Image (cartoon, rainbow, N blue to C red; front, side):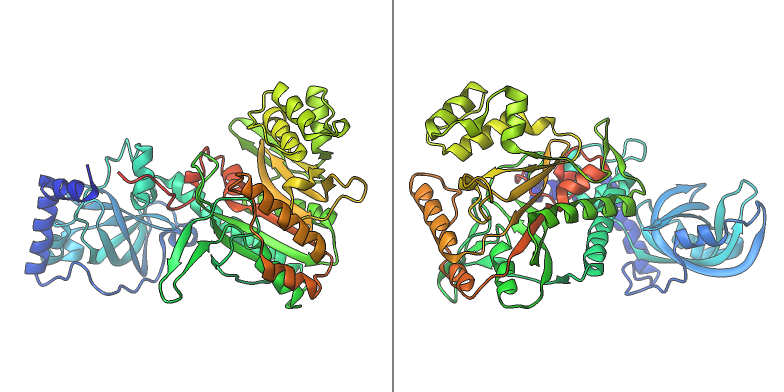
Amino acid sequence: MTDSERRSSEMTDPLHSVRVAKRESLKALGIDPYPYSFERTHEAGQLERRYAGLAAGVETEDRVRVAGRIKAMRNSGMFIDLHDASGKVQIFCHRDLLGSEAIGVVRLLDIGDLIGVEGLVRRTPRGELTINASAVTVLAKALRPLPEKYHGLADVELRYRQRYLDLIMNPPSRDTLLRRSQVVAAMRNHLAERGYIEVETPMLHAIPGGASAMPFVTHHNALDIDLYLRIAPELHLKRLLVGGLADKLFEINRCFRNEGLSPRHNPEFTSLELYEAYVDYTAMMRLTEELVTTVAETVLGTLRVSYGGAEIDLSAPWPRRSMAELVHTATGVDFLALESAGAARDAATSLGAALTGVETWGQALEAAFATRVEDTLIQPMHVTGFPRDISPLAKADRHDPRLVERFETYINGWEIANAFSELTDPEDQSERFAAQMRARAAGDEEAQLLDEDYVTALEYGLPPCGGLGIGIDRLVMLLTDSPSIRDVIAFPTLRPR
């Protein structure tokens, strides 16, 4: 069923018709069911805190104005549970307080309607904080009923497609997205305290770069050129370092990769990417630990988190192990002792990695790591020693030219962070791009394109620097015990109905 067919079906539903009739009755009474504004004095949560010490059965002379959505009605609307973003307050509607005309308006209300209420605060003999309504204002007449209270919105697919319903009906979904906001705010605050400035870089790129990924393609009509949605902000951020805008800068960015969907992958995702001049990747390790632990303590109040029943201790410092060492420990195969790509491919295949047969030495090592090690890294760990041929933007390792100064941080078997000692030599960078172009010509569609302007920027001098990227979506999944990335993105990408 298409969305238009579903809408047509729902609009002929008897419940929909009844609500439309009530809306028309409100209009007949001279009441606008969709007014322009309503001045509130308090939110429900504020009232709960302010009157926490109010004893049962006590009435006050405090007049307040609140607004929210009706979630429950009892005794023909005499008692209403009114919810706003901060919590719930009970509304008491009685003819003696409201008058017959206003009670007539209350009779036209339904669960799901948005209303404003003015009245005096009291606590009932049963202890319920309540407002004795002296005026009720319709703020939005809901024409569709909310899902049934006790079963809520159980259809997972519907929750993602109609997130507004999910947020109305499922407090845990609201809590998850609110926590996401807190995570981002904590990151911003921590970086600002360390002297980082926040910047913005383009989301439309003439050349997709900064990562090995498939881009989305669009077309600019006025310029008559194809453009690509950003797969990473890296090359533009480093251009800002070249220009001397600041020695410490970051962007909380939206990126787009034209790849598959999974519980950990969405085509549109959010990451933190930052660069700091005059440091190397070891400083980025410390900063990664600071950011994650600060966020956890700020948002959760603890460094011990539970995900899927497993307890994870985020206390720093975190171990540092090289990729080849981890594979050797897990399998007994020492890739550093294998000199040729063919030998590395044979070893990776023997370990269960699915290869095409054209992989480089580094790609074979990475495949073996992904097959036999990655999922086992539950507690936080910095994995170092990445192969040079899969890291075209990182400086070579000071002791082994086959490797680079790069690490990825793993928690719960997921890559949470990725960082380099950034490559600053323009000739080396040009050669790395050339190798990527050869790989692309050989069929690697995710290999990076040559960005000549970026190489030109390096020729003006990029200071030694460390760069770091942290996947915000996955970090929020971890801190909210969310099984799918769709749970932590307000509007995830979905297949059309």
